[in-house]
Image 1 (cartoon, rainbow, N blue to C red):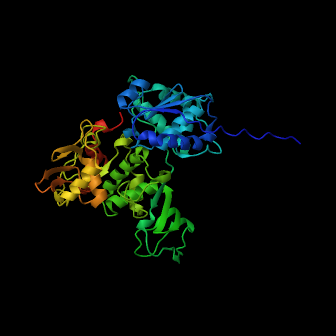
Image 2: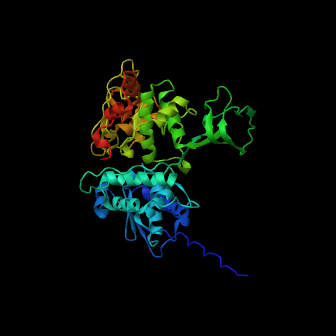
Image 3: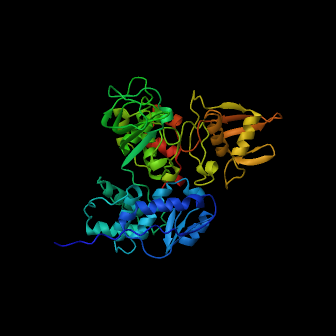
Amino acid sequence: MILLAAPAPAPPFQPPVIEGEGAGLEVMEESLRAAFASTSDFGPWPAGPWHVRIHPDAAAFEKATGAPAGRSGQWQGDTLHLRPWDQLRRRDLGAILRHELTHRRLRDARLRRWEEEARCLWAEGHARPPRAWPAAPPAGAQARLDRALAGGATREQAWAYRWLRAWLRGGPLPHPPEPTGATAESWTREAPVLAETVTVVWPAERLRGPMAVNGHQLSHRLGRTWRFQGAVRFQPGFPVGPLRGTVRIRAERHGWRLAWTASRTAWIAAAAEGELGADAPFEARRALAAVLDRWLDGHPRQHPAGALCPLTHCAVVRGGAMPGTIRAVEAAPPLDLDPRWAFFTGSAGGHSLSPRVVWGDGPAEAGSAPEVPEDRWTAWERTLEAAQVAALKRDVAAGLKPGQLGMRLGASGPYAVEALRLAAGRRYGWTTWPSNVCEGELRPDGSLHLKGRGWGHNVGLCLSTARFRAAQGAVAEQILAEAFPPSWRLP
């Protein structure tokens, strides 16, 4: 009998020296600890001290690393350099750290560049490697991938990341771009999170009352859970329509927690239909599907375990989509849009804004969104009472980022309009301050009178415009070209 020695236990997490300032320091160590644990199967952790440096601004990060604008983190020796916290918190911090910590685990593995990058992409969404990696590509493809990742032109690198994600999913592999003779450009896009499936969670507070699934009444015993696979239907009048995929239901104190896990395509279709309606023109649904596909690649998943919510915070989902919407998703045009700016809004009210104006970051150029006849959000007025204004001043810190739209409230401010709008929505309901295109008049009694246009943040694809232009005969490609200026797109 041959006795095999038990594998050595993985070394415990040794916190790095974290340098930087701001609220990010309070959560960074715990996030690193979680990323360290979830990447342990990808390789051994190198011995010795290590550092994490959160830079105060983007310029400092790029100067220290030479990294382009799209990257959030990069190793220099034993130091992981990260962008400023206000940028990290708008992205998926867990995915960024899992990606970068996997690079460190693989640094002595002697993998080819494309192999290492593929494993880091996989680690963003998986706690352990697959049982077997897909078959290696031909030698010529491997060489081209390595060249693109090492410093190819932006189009080449974009193709390389698309190719690696498709290879990992087992999907069709994209053709490489035709040579253009262009010299190497800086890489401007961060590798997105691999998303084979998407999970949407309805919190218990939104699903109260009885629950019947496929004709069977569920007993509301706290903590009891059910799992359904395939087609799932609820009782008439239930706020969630039929779903197809994996549905998990748990009885909680305030109602039922429902989690739906489905394919990327199924979620895009459900969200496109939830936002536009099943009766929206087909070309409008194609356009929104293209934006949602890019949004998934770059949007920060701020809910637990990387789930999405079924509300406007992520995208409205009321149930599975009709076949026509699924066809629209399958026919959605490719969109070379930087996923960080893949936004859509309910109505721009004829006044579209740029990401820079709303968030103080990103492109400064706004897209086109003409006024739509009979749009209820073409113009609106609201009045906030003095006590409500005082509460908003307490909720929102004064100060603006370069280029950001602001508003003074009497002698105080200026405050970012987007921050005021969100604070008003959380406190008093989302119709209290409908959009960012607005003017405010602080009256002698302390009340604030607002006049504005639009519904939402006014950035990106205007859904009201998409419906209108599609009804006029415009195709999705035209609608998207009008909504997203060239400066928002990948070169």
